[in-house]
Image (cartoon, one colour):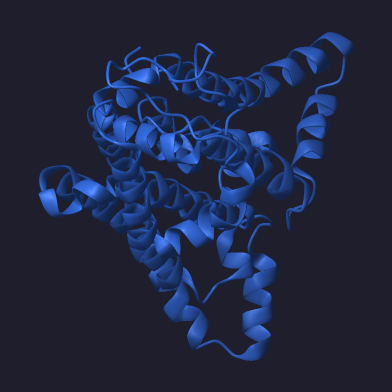
Length: 325
């Protein structure tokens, strides 16, 4: 509750004895230090978003007649300098949650990554075998592979895929190290808001890499669970590290962006534009094959429940971030 925007006056009151010139001076210093991030994130809209200069008197009382500073929905204060002050306050208040989020993401991703190494030698053996095959044999090899499996589309890139998976894990680890260093070292005290920029960037890279791998390996569980197995593969292997977003504390607009990208990539783009065909149709086909109205509707209900739950959880993440913010 200590980080709600309803309590935004706290960072301002802590600086009540600072003159307006000192506050503007700190803001200009932050802008110079964050020139590249500012240009990439919000510099283009900053002047347009800045609609007021909100300040406090010596006693901490507001100099405006309104009870609270004006705000945009999800975009923060109309006084962008006050928004900078709030982000500095938020990043310090959210220290434990941000570190917990990184640790959770690393543990979940490491568990999945470790399990994938069980079949690494088989993938490398198939890659080496593919290299020595003739062109006709290579075509026959691809034809033999089931639709929706990685070896059918990229038989020579098993090592490359694992390299990207290692890179994602390394990014989470380096992100955690950077966060800890920025909290512990005084030289980064004025730049801690960078955490709100590179943290979502890491999650976006994770979504991009896993979305690509999932698109070309969505039918890997077919032998055990049938054609709708992509639902279990998605939940258990590709998106479980995103559960860490329940613990991490990021601005509401950032959470909305991450959840929007997640839904678009994993539930819209990849299922509809999949090399193995429309994945949503596979659910309907699996339910239809059972025959009988009750069996079909019951199966369809059981298969759709996890996907509906994913959408609900995505909404919950955004709602929680808005309430906390």
